Image (cartoon, rainbow, N blue to C red):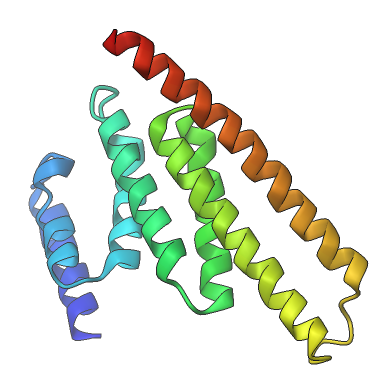
Length: 167
């Protein structure tokens, strides 16, 4: 809590004094990252997005997509993961579907969806969740397979394009 309060205070002081460093030089971002506050860092960066010059947006969006992908991979709490997925899907709309950062984030979102479906199937298998039926869980897995198949095709196309450029 102390770390978060310090970050908020530092952000307030910077705003009150008119100090607005470039996002790549942002002291709050550096501080949050040094202290391992990745979720807070992602939210902080997301808040900076509207004020960014167009020239800085692609690198900034890539960084944000990488943070969300990392958070999705490591988050254990289902509710927190759901919120991260929501933010990630919102970011995808800003990225466009075929950028490298979008593909990375889409893969992380697909993995998250797979883990959710897997968790539901385990609960159903052990009869822990009587509300779920096998057909609804099956639909979730089919959606994941469809998403991963489309993603695989897009990554293959991107790879082929990159290989052609190298020739």
